[in-house]
Structures are given as C-alpha cells and as structure tokens.
Length: 280
Length: 193
Image 1: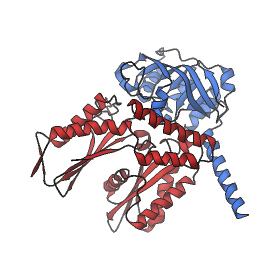
Image 2 (image 1 turned 180 degrees about the vertical axis):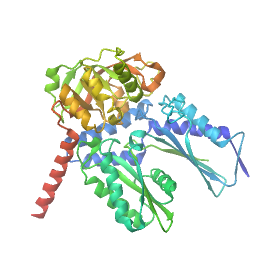
Image 3 (image 1 turned 180 degrees about the horizontal axis):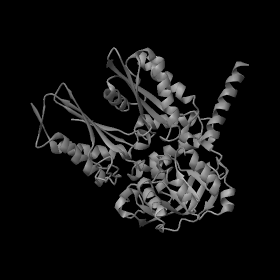
Image 4 (image 1 turned 90 degrees about the vertical axis):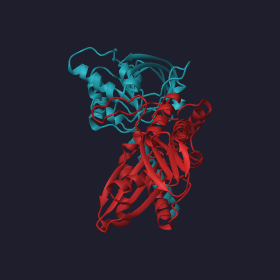
C-alpha cells in the first residue's frame, strides 16, 4: 500500500489556495475574450475588457483577482490503496488552508459559528468532500467559493410530474432572481437527482468541470446548451447592466433518485469561478 | 465619456448624475460592510456619535484582502449591497450621500435615496485587483476587531463606477436590461421582415 505523508497534503492545499485565487483558469479567460467580441452594448463590452485586465493584473502582481477569496471547499479523490500517514487527513487539509490564506494574503472570511459570528482568522474550517476511488493516488481540488454568488443559490424538491420543463423553469427563476447580485457573467452549476443534500453536492461538483466541456451524456449536454441560451436571452448582462453575457456556461450533473422525487439544486458562481487541482 | 466627481459629494454633483453614467471618483471614501453597519446603526439608535462625520460622505461596501508590505491595500472589489439594506435608510437620514457596492437595492432604500438626495454607485464586482490600483491610502477609523469588516478611510483616485440609482430613483439595472431586450427584439423582428 502506498503511503502519503500528511505534510505533502498540507503543502499541496496551501499552494492550491493561492493558485486558485491569483490565476484565472484558461477556459474562463477564453470565454471572457469571446464575450467581449459578442457584446452589442458598449458598457457590456467594456466590462468584459475590465475583467480581462483585472485577471492580468492579478496574475502579474500575485494578488487575488477578487477580494472575496471565499470559503474553501476541498474535494478529495482518495485512492483506496493509499495509506495516509503522519496525522489526520482533515487536519492536514485545514492546516493547508490556514497556511495558504495567511501566507498568500488572502481574506479570512470564515466565522466559527453561524450565529455567534466570530472570525476564525485563518479561513478554517474548510468544507471537505472525500470520495474513495480505485488506485493509489490522491487528487485534491481546491474551490474558494465566494458568497456573493453562493447566497443566490437555491434548491427545490420538484415533483416527478414537473419533469425536465420544471427543471428548466426553476433554473431560469433562480438566475433571474439573482440578477446583478452574483457578479455576472456567472457559471451555473445544476445538480439533478439524488437526495435533498446530494443534489446540492452535485451542483457544487458541476462547477469543477471546465466550462468548455459539456456533459458526456448527450441529453444533459443538450440541456446545458439550451439553458445557457435561455439565460443569455434574459438580458441581465455583465454586472447586470444589460447585455448578452449573463452566463458563460451551465454545467449539469445528474444522479439516480427516488420514485417520489426530483431534487434540483442551482449553485451559482461568479465570473471569478476558481478552482485548482493536483494529483499525486 | 466618464464624469469626474470628488468627495464629499455636493447636491450639485448629485443632481448632475444620472442612472447609467460612468463615473471616476476621487477623494476619501469610508469602507463598511455587514458587521460595521450593524454597529453604526446601533450607535444611531442609542443617540450616540458615529466614529466619523458622515455628512456628504460615501461608503464603499468592501472587505479588502490584507495589504502586502508597501501597499496601501489588497484586492478591494465591492460586496453585494442588499445585505446592508436594513441599515441604509438610517445612515442616509444622518447625511450619507453615496454608496458603492454591487447588485439590487430594496424599495425602502430607493425611497430613502430619493428623499435624501443621494446616489447609489456600482463598482465592477470581482475586478478587485484593478480596483486596488485606485486606492492610494488607507487608514483604520474604527472596529479593528472586525478584521476585513473594519471601517477604513481610503483615498481613491479615478475609481471607475457606474451610477445605478440616481437621486430621482431611476434604476440602471432595469433600464439597461430593458434596452438590451428591446434591441434584440428589434433585430429579431427585422430578420423576420
């Protein structure tokens, strides 16, 4: 069995927290350029250009592209033939978050208790999802999730009779209600199926997929394109000032569900949708 | 073409600003967000003095990242404004003239903006590295214990903003989106012809 020291995990998480906040992913950068070309309104085009410039400054000067460096969500794919040694996996991840947020000059935005609201001053604890997979490797994905967009997310338990039309209607309603608040152009993560909680997990997981990759299932790939088209006809536009580019992509993930239910979760993410990953 | 304005805001400047105007703001602004707003309004309710003179001033809803050595501030884009809505009318009554944030405001805030002759600006959400370039100085004013949410006085130069709600209550989020939909409807009907 392959052994991995917790110190390696801490180091990886630290670096990923910083990387994700400083450097915009290529898929999003390309979408900004395309959106700037396609916008018919001058202000909408200007905003896309400002976002491109902002990403360049952040990368060149090693600073966060957004001041909301998020609550840290960490996805772990842990090979079943890996033995973690030297400490506890969750502690190692949180230590990485602590180091990343302090050493990377990232904002500490986490309060220890949702009602008492005292800042933990190191952005811990992270929200951690661990998935056991085959093999002897570990994949770590760090997702700093800003709350301007997180607050605009919604979940609904639809009836099976609502079907795909009900899903489309709900996704559009959520995006419309969010309007300018979540910093459009947004990325829309949609989770369909599972249970109440699992649909929300799927919606979050959908945000990890590169925005230029469609769902491998053709039905859901078509749904993604259709939803994106409908959303961009709403006219909300970059920053909500009117325009074509309300969303850059809709990513859908689906899972089996119960005969009596149709859970749908919509997790909205801003234009600075960030994630960084490593596998070792 | 952007309109240049300076703080503190005068009624002449405010009356000259219309929803949809691009603006470059120079001067002092005060940072405050959720927790700081709660404390300010608690002071007002208790009849106590605020930690700074709010008359004619502008509040920027921002929680910046920590400054690196030699820099006045870290990344500093706007936070979502609606969370401050329940506190805003009390501050406008006290003389606050401008707010910088992003996103929608509630009906009571719009009414209070009209009544008190103020203006609501949007900074570009997420463009926090670029915005930081406009901040030349930063000093702590109050509530250091709130960390990123403390009240700071920033000196900004040519901070790019868009007027969203002007002193007449016109709302650019509604106007801009309506204009876009009209534009696409017109081009679609022309294609049909």
